[in-house]
Picture (cartoon, rainbow, N blue to C red):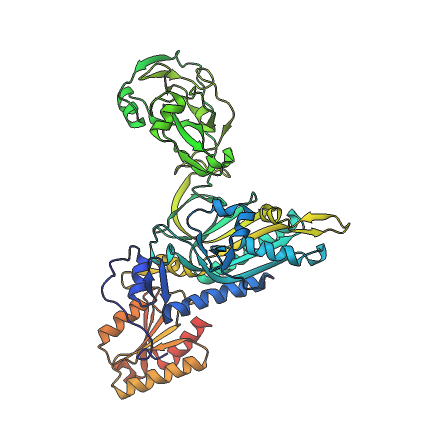
Length: 564
């Protein structure tokens, strides 16, 4: 492509609305333009990169045996009501009524549609297993769209769905998709990790993994082992349980007045204890009913874990008025004997000489031992792991890192086939529920995720697999006949060899051309300048910054080698 004809306007100033690096660079490099909050137009450079991402995804889906289809974006409300997600999904589901007052939704995902389709098409075990996939635009009515394509209201996604006769078949389908995802991200050339994750609004009781591009800009926190391969989203991560304390030497408990100590910090300051000695009780409303969560004062409740333990559809922290109404105590003075159902974190048993809210108003009991001074019923892991906690697999310390979720694979089991009564006749003729898996990749999200990881102060650093063009040919002076001729010859030879080439044939100052070239960030730049008189050109690798002066023919062969 000739840059003089390319629909491209680079920006020197950073747009005010851009709040992360990838958003700034995608706007400045002319990849995207905003239409409205969270809704973007892909311009030619951006769309070429997106098309290459989706080509890789399509190739690996086909290689894994999946078959491509295309489903409607408009979905009848009845499908979502039948699955139970119409109310569960929340305000992010884009809902509307058509001219006949039929309630519809714009699909953020397609579990309902695909299950309904299979329900009407599959009759026998002989038709199974199979995996279907599509690449399509999805919709999500984000309350606060941010970070450009990382958190938008309209986005591109590949979603695949597997259908099997049993759990063993699902395991095979899941592994095939997991391996395909690894190949995709290996080909993209980015650092990533597959981490254990919560299933969220998709649901399902089976295992699932998120594929995370490692980046400090990521909204997700990954807890990864410093030694072995264990990694999990912070919502899902577990560490080894702390040792149960030996409290044989702890003196008998006694009550002390603490009239103004309502917080962990205030108790630490007043009593001179460590936060880990304090028994903390938080009151929640689970599906509208009050429950209490009890854990150490230096630990935080993992609400995703707690919600799963309670099997609750909704969970929110109780208000001060609700705490007082249900426990008879003000916030900060609620103990495990509050009269509510209590979920104890397993590590509460590590306390030896503790502090707990007393039955006496405005007081706390000190020298407290769980199961001596208050009863600890069944425990569960309901806390957020911390950096330094022991890895659940090998015991080495956990470390935290930022991640951008770009893919997610789920074992759904029969969550949707049960709702839609999607069955097959087995070899004996008996009807059985089909077992499902689902597998998503945010193809448009991959691009900003890659840019967050691969950039410098000058601009984007494209990996060669998804770069809009492989090589940027830049004649320093387009009016110089020899430079123009050599640059043009290289450009046409690259095209003939199947190399995507961009030539900067604009009548611009060299500084402008080089600034734009670094901003756009194509993998290789060939500068055709005064050295052409000796038969040489300058070759620069964008990722490393390495510059070589090479004979024209050698430069051509070097680029071919890098691309091929």
